[in-house]
Length: 95
Image (cartoon, rainbow, N blue to C red):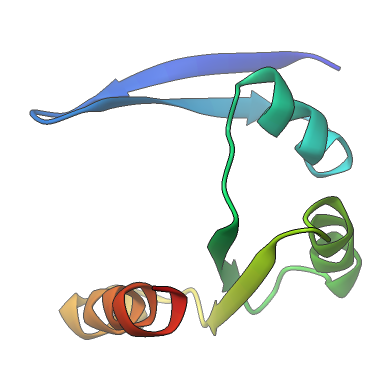
């Protein structure tokens, strides 16, 4: 499994992004190897992602409380309204 990690730096923080093939099949391993621990999460999912991939992520996260937001990945939906909706989900449904 060949993976690459890049570090994203912002004014307030920095974080790593993992890029590579077969990441979904190794999702839990990637979380563990990077010491990523959480109890709840929000998955923001492109409507065109095959259901088999979503099932694999659900299985990897079976001990976690998972919330899902499905969206159409077009330019029309890349806006403040969509961002606000995701933030609302994070604030009111996950908290």
